[in-house]
Length: 142
Image (cartoon, rainbow, N blue to C red; front, side, top):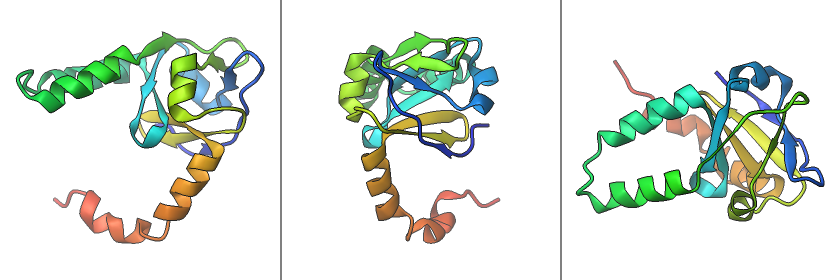
C-alpha cells in the first residue's frame, strides 16, 4: 500500500526521486501511464497486470472501453527505479501532466500518482472541503 504526500523535484535529466518507503515495492519494475485529472499513475508491474486483466473484462465492442484502453496502454512506459530511487519521466508524460520542476508524489493505495505541484495544490484546495461528505458515496457498505 502506498501512502503519503511527498514533494520531490524533477532533475535536469527529467528524473524524479521516489520516496524511500516506495522503492522496495517497485524494485522489480513499474508501469507509468496517464491518469485522470492530468496526473501520472505508477503501478507495480503486478498491480498493473491485475488492472489490465480487469480491463479485459470490458466489452471490446464498447467504444468507451476501446478508447480508454488505447490511451492507457499507448501511453504506458515500463521502468525500474535506479539505485537512488529515481525514475525517468518520459517527455510525452511530462507534457500531459504539465511537469516542469516541482512535483508531488502521492501514495494512492495500490498506485502512486505524480502531479505538478501547482496542479495538486489546486486539486486539493478544490476537493478537501467535500472530502468528509464523500465517505457515504464512495465507501461500499456491507
